[in-house]
Image (cartoon, rainbow, N blue to C red; front, side):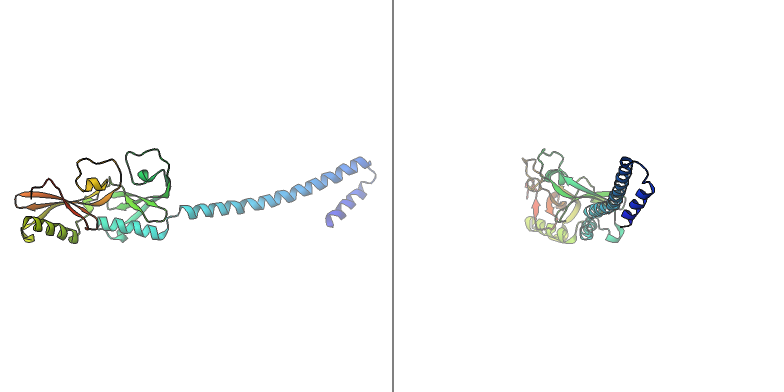
Length: 239
């Protein structure tokens, strides 16, 4: 209403002008007012849209607390370092092209079967450990190139299982046997874990240990999985 009164007042003040000029002035005023409304509404809408996009991106990129705890727990078990003394230094959201790439495979096909997740780097003493984690947190894989041997001790339960097997096979008392070396390893697939001579390039990792036991004058080599449920003696050993 105020706008109409304003226009009427303007028309009265210029009533002596030709009709064509008066119409041009009215149309110009209407256009200016309409553009002002559109401009103001558009300017108000932009910040809101940006805020929504930013918040959605932040939620997507952020590593969930439960998954962060799982990764730190895995690093703690492998290294023997308390979780409180470990630190996540970098989190990068990633789309891994296929399971082979996700599993740190060195030779992978061009197949595109994406896995959504993160690359997580953890500071362990003087080392940086790289993990690949899928979005649900059901798969947490440590880069097999990471040297964990200087940070890890063979769990007693696994040592006991290996010594017990060696004692049974050799008929030597456990007290007379000794673990001389224990090396954490990621065997690229079950075939290699089982000391296969001819294995495919399949990457289906088995995490565990290579354990050497002194039996009389021999050194016996074992492969043991992480849980200790599989204890495999090198078949080349003469028992």
